[in-house]
Every structure is written in structure tokens, then in C-alpha cells.
Image (cartoon, rainbow, N blue to C red):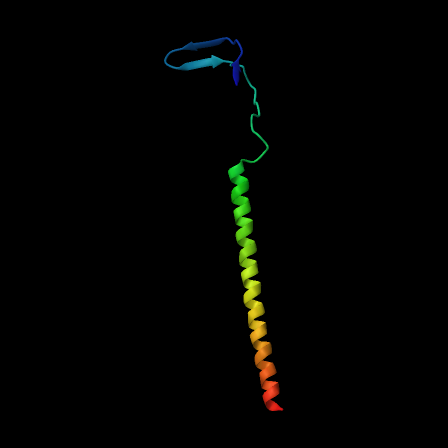
Length: 80
């Protein structure tokens, strides 16, 4: 909201003015600090995707470790 207070401005010619113009700017914060539901939904989907990817990596790593362990066990049993 802008309120222009009364002021005296003198001028002559084409667009040459002198004097003081007084104005007051009032900033009113109408923003809502609570995020929109869509923002929370996107955040939740992103976190679920990151958790799923982490779980997938852990499963793949565990599968590799299991394969390595079984091959070493088979090798040690075959050497006996």
C-alpha cells in the first residue's frame, strides 16, 4: 500500500519539476508460513525415492557379499 502525502511541487517547461514528494510505503505480510500440501507431497515423494534407492543399494551389496561368501565356502570345502 502506498500513501502519497500532500506536497508542493513546482514545475516549468516540458517535464522539469522541482520540490519534494513525500510518500509512505506500508508493507503488509500476507504470506502464510504453513507450506502448501503439494510442497509437502513433493518432499514426501522425494524422501521415499531416496529411501527406496538406499534400500536397493543395500540389497545389491548384501547379494554380492552372499555370493562371495558362498563361493569362498565352496572353495574351502572343495580343497578339503
